[in-house]
Length: 322
Image 1: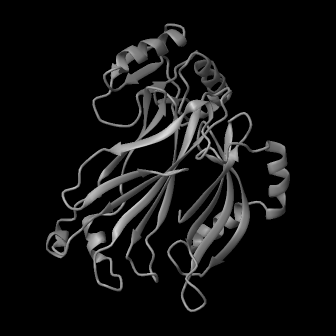
Image 2: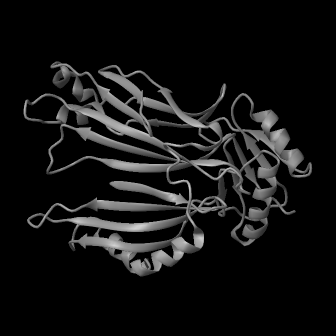
């Protein structure tokens, strides 16, 4: 996406709504592809449930023109958005500036760049990031294609820190060197991380929506390089529940039961195949103990194995027949 605005959670935290823009309008004299929608998503699966039309300018023949036309055709008329908003009574859109229940967003470097420096600064409603401080020797080193430095986002409450997301600045050293401004000096990669906290009493457990904005300052205005992404995380261990699509109703009920037991499900995946036994895979130093807690919450019937590959999930639960 090129623009994103968080419009709020439903009061029960089961869904959230975004105002999004894809592509760019390059003006009357240039080919353009830009689509603006309001999109309502399910908080457990992350899937879009409904969308509403806002604006479009799509020139045929461009890379994503057909995709944007399809998304526009499948969206509801803008006039229906008002009724949807009134029914769902959105809340929490100011969560980045006023986090509930004592939570706040923090950040720390996850890697150190070989060139330039990574700076992180807390602002009122976001954490500003910048990969900057490059010298004139950059042109000689840029061919190495050094990736952007890593950033680790943390949820902080009192003395407790909960890891939420590790990501890289989405530009490499060649991008930085390619920037051209009026003084022909290298640009810098800047960004902003925001957190929108779900309602405290959501039956599916407390969670947070993280938005990441990124921009390559110094790039030509005729070809901007900004982008924005979002991620869903729980305020605890990151757990994926995998169920066959036909078991969706029971999987959702189980997710609420697990949330009440302190094991909120981050992501419900409805792509699993039917299986006889429940399988639990764990990762990290505390993963084995977390898996045992999950077995207890499920009634004591599951097989446990360790995950060797790195990843962001602490626990993956493949549901069996129950």
